[in-house]
Amino acid sequence: MVEAPVPTPTPTPDRTPTVTPTETPTDTPSETPTATPAITPTPTPAVTTTLPPPPQPPVNPPEEPEEPEERIYHLTIRYMDLEGNTLYESHEADLFAGSAYSVPSPEIPSYRTDQPLVEGTMPARDVILTVFYYRPVYVRDGRTYTVIEDYEVPLGVGSLALNTGECVE
Image (cartoon, rainbow, N blue to C red):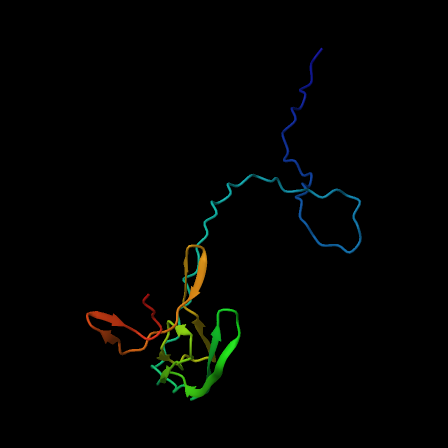
């Protein structure tokens, strides 16, 4: 028996088409699954915040100061006793701001004040001042005495000086 040669197969290139996935937009849903790209994690960059520089005021040439409007303000000085009774008619004046004023307090019989002269500079607002008068009194042995003002000129009797209103027994 003679053997016949058996042909050996030669390799032939594979002619089967390969499909590469591509994404194409379609209006109708496709029933074939689409390939999703692989997601690889990327490092998150560090967040740094930089504040904007503060706003700078506009550079303008210096303006000339405006002259203040001359307004008149009202000064009222009231003269009262410690109980709030008016002892003398109020002094009233209209003055410009910055004006100086000097008003003597009236003398009221049997009363004293610690402000014989009211003076100052008028501010840019209305001012009401009150000058308080009091009756000088003192207490001795549980009794209250009202002081009667002495006259300026003492009267002399020998080496003893007396003022009007003083008694010697």
